[in-house]
Image 1 (tube, rainbow, N blue to C red):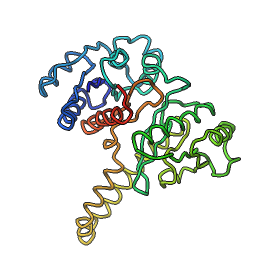
Image 2: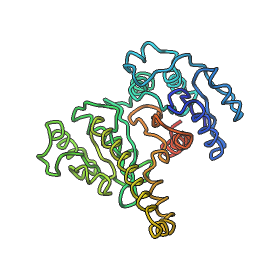
Image 3: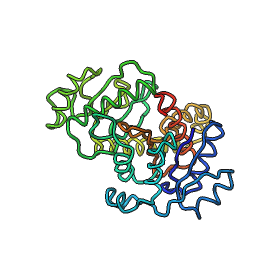
Image 4: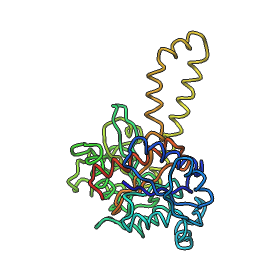
Length: 318
């Protein structure tokens, strides 16, 4: 299985992407990476791990560039060239930790949307209290949404959870300021009406505190709200785990307790570690595109590749 990798978009540099691919290769011997990036930076890292497949990309689209303008001007960038490689059928999927906006623009134009889909959405899974996961749709691709977008996000999310998480009729929740049907702005109210008539397993409105409760399998919102929720969850988990660690190491007695509970806290930390997820898929495209976290390390890249492989196997995508 060939997967195209953007070697230039990661904050931790080319080395993290190549190391992540090497680690993934150990797990999945049938996996073959093709790297897109500047030859001078790539070749030394590839030689360390015995890789030799790469495509020279002369430019890089940075997060501070206007996505649409950068996409048009930088046809020789790692993102644009990688997406074209997948579009032409040379690889099964594309992974990038680069600019979300440029990746969305490029994927929409080059890869193309599935029939009937107005906007692709970025979905990411978050751990729930019950031990499962909830898919947050959208978590950063579409800042302004029409009610029809939100209804389509729910359909895409339900399909993903059915095929990849093996859930029968996933429960859909619409993120809102209250659970009552009449709550929210005009977009939320109209989206609620569309979801009621959609035939999906719609559980109604959910408040922010209910997202991780396990009461729904797909939580739907616009990308502006979703991205704030995602970053808040990441930050809150990091702070809380830090506070717990600080308190457990504050005295001899608490250190003993920490030693006894080390395994449990390790599992908790792992559940809230974005690196264990790997990345967020753009749902609604004709082919698989995974957006990895900008600060991804080798572990995150490895798991993004694993996610591509599992997604491909579960959906039968070529």
